[in-house]
Image (cartoon, rainbow, N blue to C red):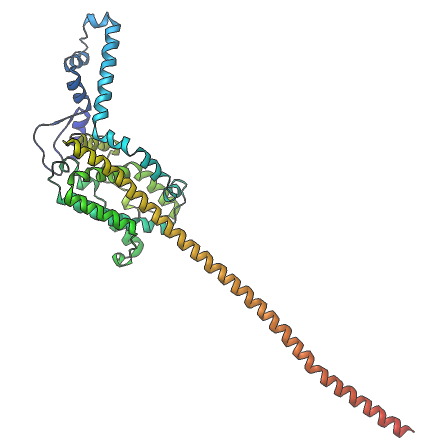
Amino acid sequence: MLLNEISAFKSGYVAAGPTHQHSAEPEPGFLAIFLTLSGARSEYKRAKSGSVSSDHRSHPSRRSTRQLHQKQMQTAVMASELSEQIKAATKDSHVRAENTELMLSYQRGRVSLQQYQLLLCSLYEIYEALEEALDTNASHDAVAPIYFPQELSRLESIGKDLEYFYGRSWREKMTISAAALRYAQRLREVGRDHPEYLVAHAYTRYLGDLSGGQVLGRITQKSLGLKSGEGLSFFSFPAVSSPNLFKQLYRSRMNSIELTEEQRSGVLQEAVTAFELNIQVFNELQDSLNCVSDTENEMRQRHTQHKQSTTAAAADDKVCEALQSSSSLVPRFLRTLFGVFVVLAVGVVYAF
């Protein structure tokens, strides 16, 4: 069904969703929206059929003016689209998220097993809250167009990865950061009080994972030496055959959501909040890893110092033993020497 919808999207229209119901009327694609707003649908049809009037062919200046007008209208349409507004509102936050120490480690291919395990634990807590909120509000006007549980849900995949690393009792062994708990709490609040804000969180998490998932998955696999995709289910989207087409479909659906100005402003602010919550998770995970590393280094230093002091003490003991041994030899030597003198004295007496 999703493949059919993507094919329809490529033709300029978006059909009904694969996992939820919409009205029978198709949603217009980007080009159709643009032509409707610019009043140029008839010219588009003539251009498509090759029947451009001789008047247009003979007046390049008119054609240039028309193209400029169309470009301006397209820019206006793009500027009013929710996906573009979110992208603009979160530009600075996006850069900050990419430059956190944890993400830089990923970009450099320096991923430790402990880093990845802690990240999976936090992601499980986050996605559990997000997908519960989406499921609860699946029929909400702002959620239904971007509700793709079969294609995007991550909770089961993360659970498989955690079981691979921790075994069947992985739930009892999870370590969840305070930042991840705050993130999950915010998601539950949004799902309860402002379901339309879920659009911002779903867009931030799902499209981010879908965009960078393949690259990060390869980095993780190479860094940790994982084989056959074991422990890497989080990065895999088997129900999405073409990530690029799916992202276009998702943005089109998101842009079709009707919001009041107040709601739209709230969604944009929530998108910034979503990035900030992710940054807090990344920073806290890295801080905890640095703390563990510092503790391990301190323990190594203490062990080395103790070993050195023990070695020095042992050397001192050996010196003391040597002195004691030598001091015990002195009386023996004196007694022996005294005995020799006595023998010599007696011999001298008897000699005379």
